Length: 289
Image 1: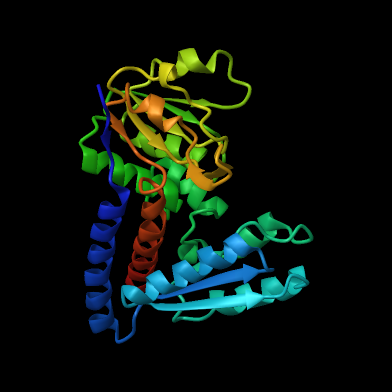
Image 2: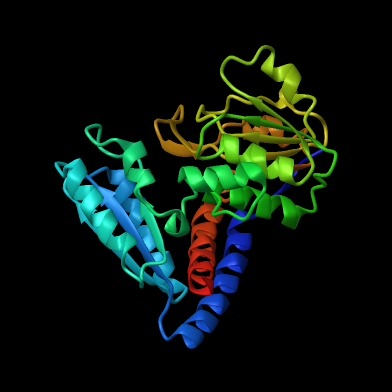
């Protein structure tokens, strides 16, 4: 058996096209485009790339994208003051604070300062609580992208055994909630889980979100299972070259899985696409109120 690869890049283009159509309708009705404001503090090279990509992507679908770049030395009060301005700006529909923040800033206080209705990352406690209750909420973008991939692939979730490796608030926990909402039987595994390989072999759907390169091996996989690899890890090959790999050992897992998301080109492209989707959703809900 060789797994069918899930093409996140192609699906992300479909999502962007849907968002573009929605943005056009929103702009025509409300006489302005949805607005996404991204806040970057410091000079982290990877974060600079991510935030510029988000700003660019928002403009490509017709949104008003704006990047606020603040110095590494920005104080907590200065950052909170900017967030207060954005919170009260009627033309700002989505606010995203790029993580990680410099160590002198309290991430929880900063994220809590983003109004839940503008929290397009889905990190505010109100949105986390609404998701847990099964009520409409802004959902973290990567798990949202995973669910879209599963739906597109035709993976049956009702009654399926799902295992999520990783318990972060960004991926692991919200992923488990979304799978549970689709009537899967969900187990969250982590670094202290006993006999993790045996647990993974029970999974019809396995989501790897642990941040450890190629940790999940081929013999951990139930034959025919759907495997979503959320990890993005940069490693050095034996030839001294740098490459991106996921949290699963691709060459081994593809020989046992039925469906597999590759790295790159699987879950990754869906994250920004779902950020755009969340921004449009936030804009619509705010105006409906």
